[in-house]
Image (tube, rainbow, N blue to C red; front, side, top):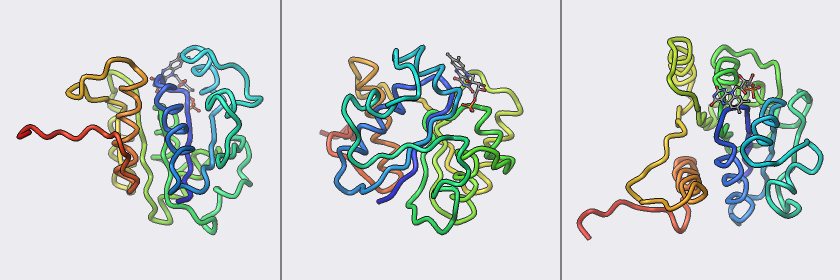
Length: 196
Ligand SMILES: Cc1cc2nc3c(=O)[nH]c(=O)nc-3n(C[C@H](O)[C@H](O)[C@H](O)COP(=O)(O)O)c2cc1C
């Protein structure tokens, strides 16, 4: 699989980091195209203590990436900006209301918004892990618009019935659900089996 992952400036950077770590470790995935919005950097510094764009992937993964490559959000000429680029889908985690608005209204004014626009036009999976609380009517309308265009609205709402003991485990189980949705079920994913 060849996937695109975008991190934007919503709260929940730990979820994005877990996604990148799991994809790096998954042998079914050959390439991950990674884009961090300018505003995600502010949240990464706040929530994970990761600062600066330089060597961002190394800092997030704790080691040099083996298959993940980073593109600047301003680089609308990157490979993932074209429908000719072979891709199996795109995940935005976390997805801010601003990025949701750009995608839902087809602005295509950044690499993240353009890659999402291309994913929709090519009828490929686009998973928007939106995060905000509470939602205003604009957020709700934009979620409907994006869903009607083919995106999956997959809010950052983790489960508790698996009794996670820390935020990393909570984020990882959430990421497992996202990946199962895109056809990459993970060993270690919690599966509800009430009859056992
Ligand atoms: C610490 C922090 C947390 C934020 N949390 C959210 C959030 O959960 N959801 C959201 O939509 N915006 C959130 N924002 C605001 C966005 O970062 C802001 O709207 C930004 O313009 C989004 O830009 P982007 O979509 O290009 O990343 C947060 C900002 C900061 C600094």
